[in-house]
Length: 424
Ligand SMILES: Cc1cc2nc3c(=O)[nH]c(=O)nc-3n(C[C@H](O)[C@H](O)[C@H](O)COP(=O)(O)OP(=O)(O)OC[C@H]3O[C@@H](n4cnc5c(N)ncnc54)[C@H](O)[C@@H]3O)c2cc1C
Image (cartoon, rainbow, N blue to C red; front, side, top):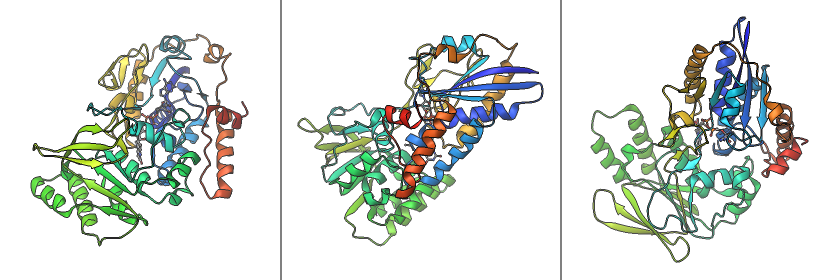
């Protein structure tokens, strides 16, 4: 029997699915000990800090992650950052294989004038702010304006728009950060414009998310019927199934009887943002009608761009176009990459499972004789790190604090607070 040591860096879905794939590949002759290294004191990646709090069912995938973590021969090292606390060379020296699963968390920029004005944010800041990510609790989100513009045509843009447009008391039974619920309850925003550069037939929303919108009890959802009819004509007969489902869902919304709630979420298509203007803060977005010279403006005090993500570079790892350079997940000998760091920001949580499973098969093919070169805990002996049992204590404390409030959990935000719950 040979036992190999594998380090997985990043405790998001891709990291856990990679660990699960390795566990499934074990035989009597082939065994793995897995160390998962995560920069935050909490694991689960975007399942904790990305997925919208009003979609709690999606977060139940964390049960799978905890099963992987407690299956044996698995250690968590939370609060340990690759590139800061430990280097890729140190990991490669000590482990038979290293798997990068660090996701892609930097918001892409529009590259237009005014984008850096106060009041112009990326979804990569706004989403972790409402989801209690410790690095984002101090983000300044100006909510003292009547209108917000969300730029983007994918599910992240839709999550952002929904969070701004729903009646904030609907967030009480969720795990939204307390600071965000308090701020949203004070919000003056009553209109959220979700703006897409191209037509509805090109939007990357998915139809289940669209079909949910009419169920919002306190928000008018507006889509212009003529926009959808024109998109159906442009798309023609050779239309793909997903596009058709999307257009059907949008048509349904556009044909729904008008409601007269205080809050409105409105879709705008074929609008290219060209400038964000304002004296010292966002006051309006200038759009060009896509494909024409015609310009128009939307007055607003908050702009949030949700146009994709790229990976932050970690020293010693090759990057290109916001992703780790790789061939089918192999970066170089005994160094692999999975998830959003490998593919870029596409695919749902489940996409990372089949992807990680394929890459772990390659990892097994590359293995040679097992190394015996010390333990990572020796390198971390002066550092407080969150082990699986510390994390279980944090998790249990958050769930217990949420229970009397009818929430799945009451999230702690700051690192010190989280470490305290873990008994560190
Ligand atoms: C706003 C948003 C909403 C989404 N909603 C849904 C949804 O409803 N349903 C769905 O199926 N999918 C959803 N997704 C997609 C889903 O979250 C991704 O497919 C998935 O999280 C990608 O997994 P990952 O492990 O590659 O990255 P991540 O989930 O980002 O995990 C990466 C982990 O690596 C850690 N890390 C980063 N750098 C370092 C470092 N240097 N050292 C150590 N650790 C590090 C991070 O802290 C993080 O924990 C959503 C995505 C976003 C952005």
